[in-house]
Length: 357
Image 1 (cartoon, rainbow, N blue to C red):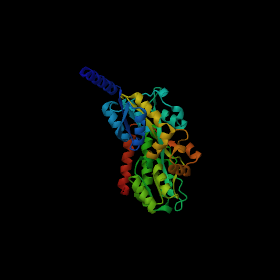
Image 2: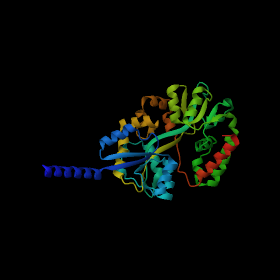
Image 3: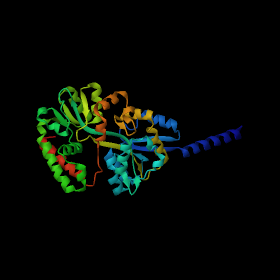
Image 4: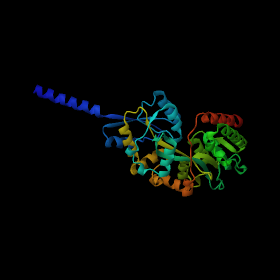
């Protein structure tokens, strides 16, 4: 009996050791809400040899974490499409993707090509799209039916009744409303600084129109629902949530085009679980998983028919906001050259000092 028990124990120990050796961890560096527990559990049931470990972050922190380690510590990251090119050139924190392992046929061609255009270096592609959304305008159409342009936030008819967030989006939107293309000026930073100075003058002159500068979606939502403001610069996802509560409050793509971000999938340079990373990418591209993901993020998947895969409450809000012409007129955020964020930051500080923002 004893030899048999010992032999059985050795077999069990060997099996456990082999299982542990074959198991791997997918270390995901992503945005809050981009890894809903429902999908993690489903993925781990589908791939029992993979455990998902999530670290929530944002663009600046993702770059800082990967820069500090030379691209180690994580197996899949999700920076926005305009934050990859410069970071890769300067720090070498990502590795090229093997597109043959990704179901790119499921992706929206316009978003896939936009990401490839922003993240291709020496013929190698460093990212593919995941979720996308826009920044634009929101208005209560019963009180501000004529809002169509970023500049309408400064319309004297709405004095004391509008809002905006003092971040780079409002700088870019105001520049477009002034008839300029800020992204085209990234190639000449002296000209871009001149444009930022003019934008600052416009926004400082607009201060009497501003009820308050919003900091987050909750305070913006409270002002809109209470009627304190009738229009604002906003993320589209915030407007979609309010539409569900009040159908008079709609997201409005500005006539110059909604500013569009795309959050991506990129593999860190020293990631150790590429196979698991590709499995996760393809997993979240499956239609039933897209609906769960969009329900968590509030954004649209960058797949063909992504809006149709939204949860029902968000689908109605998107359809109320966007026409196909609006989609065709999207303005994708351009790669940010070194120095631009500092320039924009100083401009925002100038506006805050002059307006009390």
